[in-house]
Amino acid sequence: MAEVERVWPDPLDGDELTVQTRFLGFLRATAVQKVTGLTRAQAAATPLPSSPRTSALGVLKHLTAVERWWLVIEAGGSAEPSLWPGSPDPSWDLTPEDDVTGVVEAYRAEWARSAAALAGLVPEDRTRRSGEFTVRWVLAHVVQETARHVGHLDALRELADGSVGE
Image (cartoon, rainbow, N blue to C red; front, top):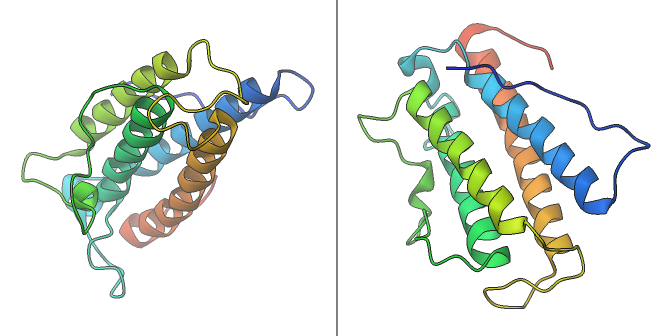
């Protein structure tokens, strides 16, 4: 599995969409970094009693579903299927086949779909699926959702093997 480079966005370079997507890229790389090096058992562990479905792999699967829904389907108008068809949200659930490499590869593949979906859009554009949101709102939502879950990954990684850090 190739390492994902974490690059902090330049505070003086880029328009609104560029800055937001660069922050999203930084958060994506951080999320991947948090699971890199974990065994399947460590990455699938659910050590939080109040959140029995929350594992490091589950967080990445959920973030993949978040990008699919908000960026690819809602913003981009794609007909691709949602990765959370139902309630409670099944994107957190693991299958026996889910391992660190496969889940990371699926997450990274979604980044390319997301980039293609956002191509040619500007922040004030309405989303192509429903038109109920601006691209600005959707991207801000995905950035905050990803940041929140990177915080979960911080705790899950520390509980898995004691690693702390950026």
